[in-house]
Image (tube, rainbow, N blue to C red):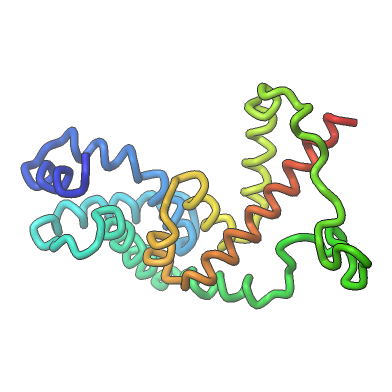
Length: 211
């Protein structure tokens, strides 16, 4: 169901349409709220307030943004207000800037050849081992998925949130930028750093299986 059809159904009071929307986005709303409020319980309350805000505001929604963007904007505003009231709110943009200000390389420098290499200066010096030798079921195993989840959980907050939305929840780059209020450049850098760390953790795990 596209935005127009979903919006029309919601305005008609279609409970199935609302249930679909909740199932699609509630968990993500709670995760985003956790960036601003002190605990899971508060994040759940903010998410519930967001759903009420959406229902009350349906007649005023003009469709200038996607329904999803509008929903998460409501959440962000309510979460910020709640966080400020409880002295917890840290704007996502501030978290992102603090991570971007660090000198953290996206890829470990030792993975590259030195600048004075006679043939391939600054090119990759070490490569991932022959993953083609690893059975497909190994990649799809629960243990491998756990390694990926643990690697994402260990990421700094802004990187974790961006990679979760882009690579797990399937958000577009523009949606991430709009809802989290960060630039396209910052979104790209955070995503690249996050992916590099997750790939490194996965590489280490899979390489152990080849030894």
